[in-house]
Image (tube, rainbow, N blue to C red; front, side, top):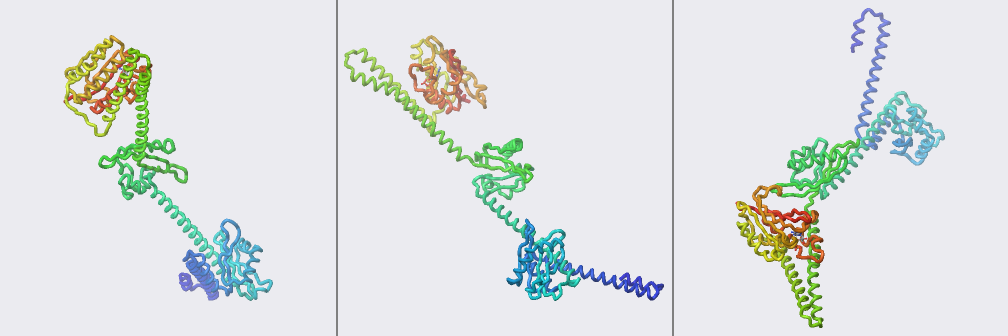
Length: 561
Ligand code: ADP
């Protein structure tokens, strides 16, 4: 437009110059028009071919455009294998056996490779005249340096040439078709990848949701990135509430502190860690959890978060407890049968001896009968102790707790064992604090404890020794000692108890082997009964002892307020 305006405003030009100039301008204008037309054609081709992502449809559109440029009777689209230089026949149109055979020969002779290499439209004339004047037009489908394939078109060309316009247009078509096919292939690959990824995601989600354990994960900034249904159920937190939030905002502080500690361990050791935690849910409900943490690594192998698996182990713990109880029961039964067998064997043997005894020796007979009598007493004592302990251990066992005076209990107990002490000339003394005299306990059971400990003291002390009973304010032994207890001590000057046995003697049937070299005395149940009784009072029992010097048995009982 501007060009013409300039010309008309230049009156100084000669007529000849003006005509030449006009001609030049007309040529320029034609060039511009052609460029514009080319650009339009390119735009239209590109639009038509790129509108679809289906290679079959691209081919259809390609052929309809080719049909507008040349008169063709059949065609085939060869695509290049992505991993090799080979071509494969992707689609064909109106090819009969004769044309197919021709294409096969062309392919084998390497024409497709050559056309792509040269990136040039090529016409192969009907050399053998077997195609009925059909020539084969090979259009390379290349975009940039990338070759997608070759479009082979059987055309009716009377002379084996294309006009320059046809050639340009078909070249353009080849490059646009290559781009469209490349896009379609990329799209198909992406769609396939997407399908694979989403089916993998579904598969993993199904596994995750069908797990019996609570499984969740946090990223490196403690934000929750995974939360399965079991986690929702276990903690009573929904996925919506959890996802994307810092776990410190969701869980109780004690659990967060525990997780912080475990996270530190996992990152420090780069290994999975597992620990147990007692999780308190609302209404004081405690859930024993086994919590396992393992590192989550991204594709560069750097730590991107942590996977947390929480398992409710209440049932497992219960099972362990049941097994332990079962084992204890077995141990108890075998100990009971052993303890019963000893006196019974003695009774049976001496009864048999007496039955078959022919000598009329009253002294020997009396000796045998006294053994039978002693063993029967042991049997009775054992059975009584067994009945007693099983009664104390029964669920719901209650005692007659009342405020009682300690000095009265001590007097009653000492009186009960006095005869025994006298036999060994053992003196029993007591130093009781008057302000620690009122206690809360079951009167008869407390006497039972005193008699048992005093009886043991007499049994394991030498003649002419002393047993001292004393009381003091209970301080220091109990973890949460409030000072509201009285500590009773019973100290003897006996044989003492080795350190490794000092805790064990409070278990059923446990005796210090050295104390009973000849044969077991007592039932081995006395201290176990004492422990149960003192614990029922809310106190504790223990012993401090030195072998050869003596033992002091201590127990605590609550003071009356
Ligand atoms: P028993 O005295 O009937 O065997 P206990 O449960 O009362 O059963 O005592 C368990 C064991 O503890 C005793 O067999 C003995 O080995 C040891 N024992 C208890 N009291 C004393 C003590 N005062 N001195 C030394 N050993 C003791």
